[in-house]
Amino acid sequence: MKASVLILTAGFGEGHNAAARALAAACDAARGKGTARIVDAFAEASPRWNLLLRKLYLTLINRLPSVWSAAYGWLDRSPWAPRLLQLLKGEQRVLAKIIAEEQPTVLCSTYPVYGFMIGVLARRGLVLPPHAVVVTDSISINSLWWRGRCDRWFLPNPDSVPVLTQAGVPPERLHVLGFPVNPVFADTRDVPSRPDLQAGARPRVLYIINSRTRHALETARGLLRHPEWEVTCAVGRNEALQGELSTLALRRSAPTRILGWTDEIPRLLRSHHVLISKAGGATTQEALAAGCPMIVNEIVPGQEEGNYELLRRHGIGAFADTPERVLAELARAFAGGGGVWWQWRRAGETLSRPFAAHDIAEHLLAMGGSAGTSLPCSPGKLESGPTRLSERESRLLP
Image (cartoon, rainbow, N blue to C red):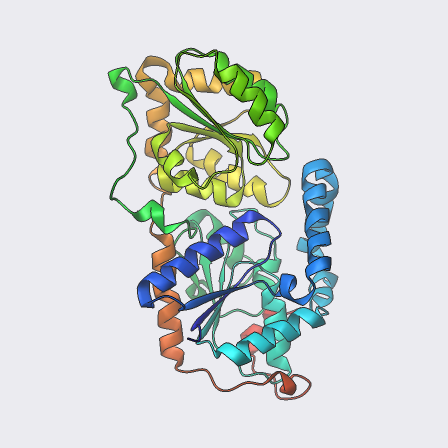
């Protein structure tokens, strides 16, 4: 079965892949298994080089955030960045080959670089289906998201709309449907319970420890010392930290879970009162979808600044960059039957969009249906042919 929706992603930030997986699952649920195919042209074109670049990216955001901030700013402002991105020949060939094989009716990218690659393919004569972009950042959105070729943008929240309209993107091409979280967030069956704080229930705290998180051990120790809170720590693949925290947890009388890598995050978010984590795109949006207010303890410069700004503007949760501040914000939230927590929770309801993946999938499938069956295309035609860009699209390109 050929995929009618190609979802284009890359491994530079988990939010891109999380959004791609959610969209693929929603498309398959709507039209049957195999409706969507996820493509990482970077990994397929040069696996070893892609792995090296991913390690470099993680090193920059985890150990050299100021360097990453400068690089992010350069990508946002420089007129040379788009021109360099158009030189990704291997990735362009992979993408053209897959389009020729699958004959999709619509392209959807959750990573901004594909817009430039698609623009190059179109200018070289490749007949392409409509292309939509799912923006996975909020407010502090890099211009690479809109400088490439695109027919429609899907935005995670209304706060992000002015960023694109002020840059000249036509408002009619913008659709605020939310961030495509895992469709399980939209499943109202067997929803985990979240005990009522006003009835005197124990607060439940979920701490997701990321690779860059500073003060992780000190923060976890502080949480485990508090006798009235139920605590769940997810430490990923840090086995040493998992062992140490498991030993500390044995001394507690309150319910405690110390998890390694887990696929239970959606259930945990829906059953806990507060999440402590860095302001990653997928993490922030999943917390909103689950109705779980967030205490942000890390912000990667650039894209994550907008994620926290979204929470700050709407009064959802707090920022706490030390263990002492984290514990203080939790105590404030849970005091007096959780009055502050309820304020956070109600404020978050306006941004919660658990059905976003289904809504975006419907739009994508409609785009493909209105476009009809895409015409045959061949990678062999890439070196010549007329440009198929409107005047407006041409002005958006560098």
